Structure formats: C-alpha cells, structure tokens
Length: 244
Length: 320
Ligand SMILES: Cc1cc2nc3c(=O)[nH]c(=O)nc-3n(C[C@H](O)[C@H](O)[C@H](O)COP(=O)(O)OP(=O)(O)OC[C@H]3O[C@@H](n4cnc5c(N)ncnc54)[C@H](O)[C@@H]3O)c2cc1C
Image (cartoon, rainbow over all chains, first blue to last red; front, side):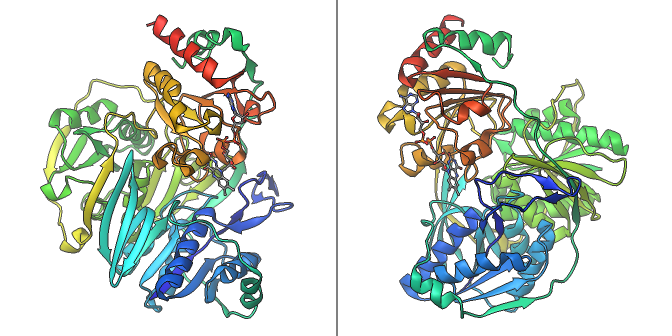
C-alpha cells in the first residue's frame, strides 16, 4: 500500500499571534512551528497502518524551506520519503492543485491529511484534491481501518457519527481519535536525516490573496460575582448582557 | 445571481442556513442581483418557502430519494451542476464540517476560490474582499477573492438577520446522479436525538475536568435544560470518554460562536479559548481565582461548580 500524508507547517497552538510590516505579515519572531495538529493525527494513523500491514509513506508539504524541520520530524515519526512543493501555501485551491499534481503521478492508495489547518481552518483541501483526482473523499474521519481494497471509516456528523465502507483509493481529512500523536524516537531522528526529500516547483497561481491582518478588540474587564450571590448572574445576563 | 447552499435538518432549512440566505441577500443588494437557495434532500415545501422571509427569491429543491441522507459527494455534484446551470458566480453557505466537504468538491469541479470563516459582509470598494477569522479566532485576515467563481463559508453571527414577509417560489430540480457518487456504503449512523445542535446553538453550557467525572454531569445538564442550551466539553473530557466526542470544543474540536458560553470547571487553556473566543458573552465558573479563563471572560464566579450550578438553575426556573 502506498500512502501520501500531506502536512502543513503552522504556529504552535500556544503561540501569541501578532503581525509586522504594517499588518501585512505574520510576525514569526519567537513563534515555534509544528506539524498541523490534525495532520499529525493523519501521520500517526499512517504509521500505525504501516506497522500493522506494511506500507510506504510519502510525506508532502506545500511550503517554503522553513517547513523542513517539520518534514524531517514526519520522517522521524515513520514516513519513508518526502516531497516539498516550494511555494507559500496561501490559498486552499492552490494548495490542493499542488497536492493533486503530486498525487497524479504517485499511484497512492490513500491520501491522508488533517481535516483542516490550524491557521486558516478552512477544511476544504481534501475535498478539492479528491474532486481533482476523481476519487472519493471523506472528512472528518475519526477512525480508519484497511482490509485489502476496502476502507472502514467512521466519520463525525453533527451530533454523532456515521460508519461507512469505501474502496481505495481515497482522500481522507483526519481528526482525533483516529490515532494518538507520535513522538519520534532517537533512531527515527537519526534515520530521518538521510531519508530522501525532494523539492519541486509549484504550478498555477493562488485565487485568493490576504491583504491585511488584524487582531480582535481587547476584552473589557471580567465582572466578578460573589459565589454566595451566584443567582445574580442570571439577572445580569438578562438585563445587562441581554443574552437571555 | 447568488446561490446559497442550504442544509436541511428534520425537513426544515437549518437556522444557520437561513442566516446564510440573509447574508446572501445583502451581498445581492451590493451586486444588484437576486438570491436563489439550493435545498437538497427531504423537506416540507412550507418550510422551504421560509427562505423567502430571509431574502431568497427562488428555491431549487432536489428531492430524489437517493439524496435523503446527506452524502457530501452527491450534494457537491448537485451544487456544482446547479452553479453551471444557473451561471451563479458567488456561492454562500453557513460553515459546518458537512458544508465544508460539499463546497470543497464543488470548488474542485468549478475551479472556484474558496474562503472559510467569513465574519462580515464583503467589501466591494476594490474588488471582492472579505474578513475571515484565522488561527481559530485569534486574529482576522482581509482576503481578496479573485477567481471567476467564489465560494464563501460564513461563520455564525456574520450578520444579524431581519425577517421580511416575502415568499419564495419553490422549483423542483432533477440533477444528474452519477452512480460513483453513491459507491460508499453507510453501515451505521449513530446520532443523538432531541439534542440542541452545538454548532447552531445560541446558548452553550460546557464542562471541563473540574466536573471530576461523567457521573457528576447532572447539575450541568439541568442548567442546560433550564436554559434551552446545548452542552459542550473540553478536550480532556472527551478524551476520557466522559462526554461524546462531538461535544469537544476548541482548537481541535468544534468552534462555536454562541451568544452565551458558560464554562464550568474549565481552566481556559489557549487551545480551548480558540474554539470559544468568538462567543458574545463568556461566563466562567472556576474554584481557582487564578484560572486563565477569567482573563477572557465577561462574567466570572470563583467557587465550587457543584454549589453554583444548582443555584443558577434554580434562579432560571424561578423566573420562568
Ligand atoms: C495541539 C493541542 C490541541 C488542543 N486542543 C484542545 C481543544 O480543542 N479543546 C480543549 O479544550 N483543549 C485542547 N487542548 C488541551 C488544552 O491544552 C488543555 O489541556 C485543556 O483545555 C484543559 O481542559 P480542562 O480545562 O477541562 O482541564 P484542566 O486544565 O485540568 O482544568 C480544570 C479546571 O477546573 C477547575 N476546577 C476543579 N474543580 C473544580 C470545582 N469543583 N469547581 C470549579 N472549578 C473546578 C480547576 O481550577 C481548573 O481550572 C489541546 C492541546 C494541544 C497540545
């Protein structure tokens, strides 16, 4: 089985977000980058499938050279080789186009990625890729098992979940609890250094452009209500906040 | 023409989709055009006509029995075909994980620009620009949407709908339903019934690890019941299986923007805040006065959640 795992490189979830250059660029100073948390679940499940029944895993990132530590981490966790499409991932359609171009020549049985990135949270890349390749796509996937050419999938739906079976090849947007995040071990880190990482140019152009960033207005002070008078909260929610 | 992809639940257009129709009607005013709503699946005609009250002039209804249960691939194919048939250039939907799966495939078929988490009406003074929420609510981006066909997924409360008395004409359509769209077999659907939908809810009561265990949830459920609120939880709570996974809110869970979010025994980690920070009013109940959540809250009570919850429920029931 051949698995393609697409990873994004995003600011750590605890990062304080700020902007520079007249609010036109993300301020990267002091920001640690990580593999997108949802992509990390997809990668972890791919590695489990490889351990269970054998597979080769290619990890794909659409991004600049500064994403390479995250790609090396994915290799250390268990991917066999890597491809980086050398362009800033600025637009969902554009990113999907790069992934589909790689996938077209790769004969992958499974294309896994996170349900969404944790920067723009759009949650559409998997579906666009599926449509471009003319194969089925499902998201958000909470459970995945492979039996021969068949995938058993549990997908989250509003207020519950749905189990389904579908034939490979498939594109899946993954989320917990599909697998537990994996931490690379020493041997993984050592071998990752020499695993192949191919850098290829992008094709096409973005359909959207971010022109300016802004931060939410700061919150006012929190109004404290003594525990002995807790019921006063209800009155305030009615008359002051007007939400009840 | 502006096309709205609506979602149907229990035979009626979902509230979030009515909001999307209203949003579309405001965009239509700017562009001097009209709004058509696309409804897929089983729905009552009287319910569909409500789209008119929110600004749609037409409703296209695809009601083939094959479309009764939501299938993102088939719905996407119907959406893309409808866009081609109507020549719509702007497609709008309310953000949800199902709608995301649908618009994604449609975008692939239409070579459309897609933007998610739109928080305001577009600015058309220089092209087509929208404000979107990014980093799960930690910041905003003004995004210029090029591309001949544009698809927007709007966040709850992007507009405050005002109803009118207009009606909309319902027209049945028979889209092409290719066999390969139905190749996946659904073997089981597990769905809580009679629950208030969390992503759609105006009021949410949420519990964290401070609730100490699943057996202690009753006072929280009682408060939610008295308020008519949906229930939610923090990630460790769903990881521990104290509550079902679809209740998990935060950076890696459901993102909510209700009018009121009451956090009970939740510390307010940055990843949790990311999913709730666009709520209009945040109430925090925590026994630790240093809990980070108080910094993000509008109202706070320092105390034991098990003492405070019943008091709040009593106050609401007394006022009813
Ligand atoms: C990549 C990543 C993604 C994450 N995504 C999410 C996410 O999407 N959502 C999420 O929620 N978390 C997420 N987390 C986890 C997050 O960092 C926190 O660990 C989590 O939110 C803490 O949950 P909690 O507040 O319920 O528990 P705790 O942090 O343990 O807090 C419990 C709180 O309850 C209070 N308490 C205890 N007893 C009582 C009582 N009797 N009465 C009143 N108060 C009481 C305590 O003072 C404490 O503040 C993520 C973490 C990572 C690394």
